Image (cartoon, rainbow, N blue to C red):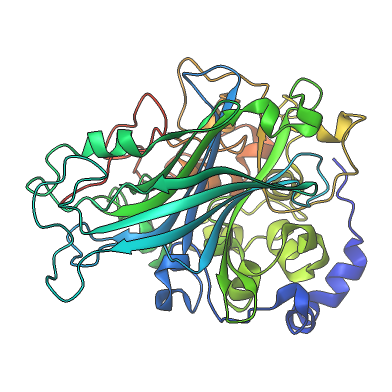
Length: 453
């Protein structure tokens, strides 16, 4: 697939272009806040806006629908009371859809939150007795939300008074948390469901990759760093027609998915967090570009030479060669351009499936490279999902969307080492964390209940 970018001009501009652009509206970071799993320099100051993961997949138990999830607030310690982990109230939590390949948002699902705090000056407790329902008077702190669907034609309120599933205080306070989760799921007009609340941290990985790539000798692997922690989740399940181009997933089934957080700065809402594909801001973007990336709209990605270069000439590949002697594939890495910027289209090589028919469909716009999580909704759920997704021949897995069970760390390591080009996996290149510590649920919202210890 041709990358429609003036490479010579971009490479010539180099990092200087990114620095120059960062002073303009394209890369503004008015609030100085960043996003994802604490990977950007200033994220520790604002975890409520820290967007950690995005998932997009064809619903395995409900034909004709797609499920979208986004998580915030990394590393929630389950016992972190008395305030626990509310969503921010002067912010907008978004899942955004591009359904014609031009990198511009066509549909935004927007959650906003408000507090009901009954504690006053009488108690420090989150609840003063067992909580058996979302309207239980023993629950002293509660959040409600509004969900809107926004398109260029206007905005429609889908949920006006949803209730957030509370933080899981513990067995004495919430003896049947599963019931609280079930009560918090709301039906949507026209079909579909939504959920907002606390969940298990479903991203399984060994984060000791930052210690010289697992200790410099792959000795630091096999430990699920995220085990036992929770996150805050917003989730959506809607008919595919609700997100497809012109409402017809058969004509063009591919969507691009991103999640963002907008924070009110006293004058206006400013994007302070962004997540699309996993690991991009953590291990693809350099330190000097991380905060700027979080404020960047995907439609501007192709204009930032430094970001494009980190895809076509990835640092991780050079580190794997330097530390482990795994020869880095030749650059420019067009295979990674397809994974991260354009989507995988029909071509010769190990991956023969067409996962991005946008460029082949007469109804779609001219494809603009952008870092998005792309999902081809026409590919049915796998009967026997493989954790390595497309690299293992399971075309319903990452990088075709992202399921909760996809081992994105191993997939990314193998892809950077050249597996998508050669069709061969590099033996031993794994963090040895192959699955989440808690099983995924069989129905919406699929993500496990939050841990209590």
